[in-house]
Amino acid sequence: MLDPRQGLALGVALLVPGCTQTIRVEEDDAPAATVGMTTSQPTSGPSVPQDDTTGTVDNAESSSGDQSSGAQSSSSSDGGGALCGDGIIQGQEDCDCGEGNICAEKELGGIGCVALDPPDLGGVVTGGVLLCNESSCRYDTSSCFYCGDGYLNGNETCEDGFEIEDTCTSLGIGLGEVSCGNDCQLDTSDCNACGFIFDFDSGDCPGDWDTGRTTDAAAATSWECGVSNGFADGPGFGASRKWGTSLTGAYPGNESGYFASPALDLGGCTDQSVTMRVTHWFNFGLGDGGIVQVATANPDDESSWTTIEPVSGSFYSATVAASHPPVAGNPAFSTFDPAEQTWVDAVFDITDYAGEDGFHFRFVFGSDADEVSGGWYIDNVEILGTPRE
Image (cartoon, rainbow, N blue to C red; front, side, top):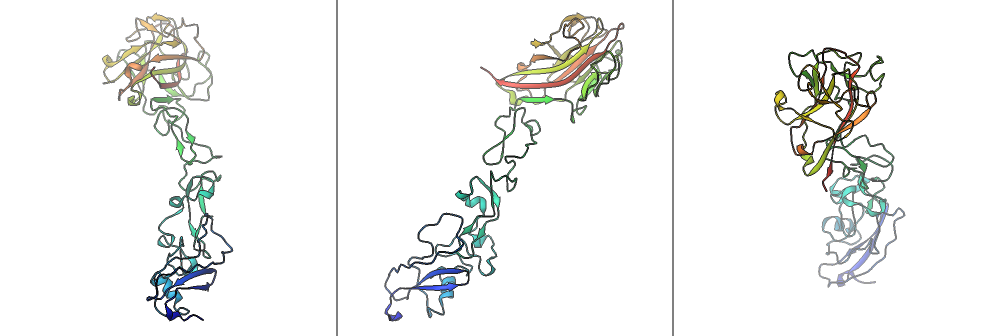
């Protein structure tokens, strides 16, 4: 038998409940030496790849005291060895939660599932609880979450199989489709910051939209937002809400009324070609009609508004009489349009207003004192920018 006082490094195998470890103890006055020993592998292996050195500690500092009775204190107090279960991370241990395996952050090396990002989980790690294998003192990732596991958890904002309720519009970044990235975060790269859509089926009916008349001499405006009914000269019953000149009957004579948008920020439209598409239905009496106008400042001042004309779809089809400006005596949508009494699009080029942070538009209807009819209905307005060539 070797005398431990001869200064040789000894490898001592200690059996601790739930864990078999090899601890190296060296005498203070012994010359540097390396003793290689092999340990038995735990029956419940860790969930991260292991190297061939697990369970051995090289060239640990010496400890004082009897080797057989002082091995525990040696491993926990002076770094002389690694003892799984002593609450101290040493040697090749990833973690050591001590008695009862109750883990705090420091016993896990100060990290969690996301920081560890174990490669064997099959996707980007998004959260969960990092555990410590009490037999091996290696990380246990079985309670970590990852993108693609079919569960919406951790820091995930989306997951395959779950419907994405957010839209580019609801997120305030224009139009386009929101998708789910491979990190289970919403991907808004297809959103166009230069984009607005108003279908009047949500809070924008009437919301911040305004109604009025262009002159006090005109009849009260008939514009209102809601669901149309089935009166004979109108578009018929419709489940969707829309703006219309009286939703339940004919408009009045001598009207010069409008409904106008809130201020829109077209700052995201810089260097883009911008169009405004309007889906509308109309049935006008002879001499009546409607126009579209825009303004970038002082919308309460009638002189701030400029009439714009369609570039495709339905066009202003005639100069109408009406009773009051700005419709009176100007080209407008009218009863002479062959698309009258059908839902049709009219497209306007508003590229000149790209970059404006206070863009307004409005629909102005004018009638004369004679024949009245079904009126003008707006079901959808879409503003969209595209990169300039």
